Image (cartoon, rainbow, N blue to C red; front, side):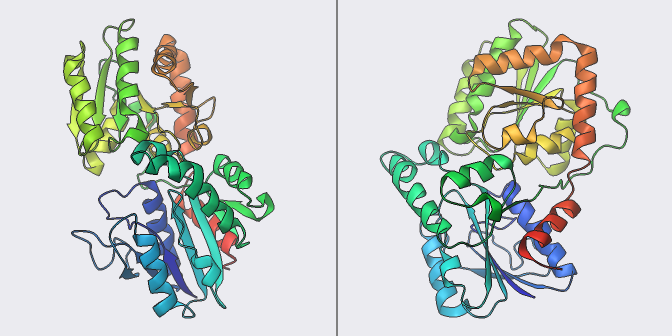
Length: 371
């Protein structure tokens, strides 16, 4: 089968995250099964010919996140329409390509990891952020529902959100998100930091609400004096500067270590040695960082938002209200009972082992009708 996958970022994009990892893993499995895969994606400084997807053909159209959807659609209509058996349109952040309306004889499928509507209020300056949230995303998503194309998503939360925008639940398929790091072999042999440690990981963006995590750490530390915090991820951009400035003024700054951008090995080591990871995104499709950290024998404390409430179960982590005080109470609850903590991290580890890309691929094939 000849497949076109339209997506904003490839797996080597500087801002690549969990969605791009899923795309890479699924595409490479399609290629190994004999299918031909072409990615229509954006350009960026340092972009490679393969986009990190071994065996794929890469076509790049535009580099701005604001104009890329229009440029990619124009390129598709002019040069690619009618050349593929299957077109997968991946939408991340509420800006669709509308390629599903121009599929011709090709089967078209939509892939939404998340709607990303709330992100507009955090990532785009007013008034454009409000226009995106209140006008552009609702209208664009409703229009996309009129395509009647099958929808793939990665969580029940996103399925429910998309249903409110016109997508029929019976035509919506949920696939699991796999892990690209191996679960530890023996949880009993893992070595944690000597002091109780909470981890924050990911690019510092306002939608991730990293400062909430630091505030929660400060509140919890008042009752757990030995508590320390590790923070890893890019701090480039205005919000990253705000986070670092806030840490510099914290009365507990000596107990907060900023690791900077970490390699995969360094990230995995931090996950394994920490006692918990804090995740406070405004919304997620799933929250791959949660189950990755679970695979290293570490539970998560997260905000009760779309995606994160799916990646954390009551027996694998703690879900709190969306404020630093509640998050701090979650930290205190986690450390309140050592036996309960050991059971929780065991449950998290065991559950993570069920979430493989092999399972995701089988789910995906069923959703798109590939034998």
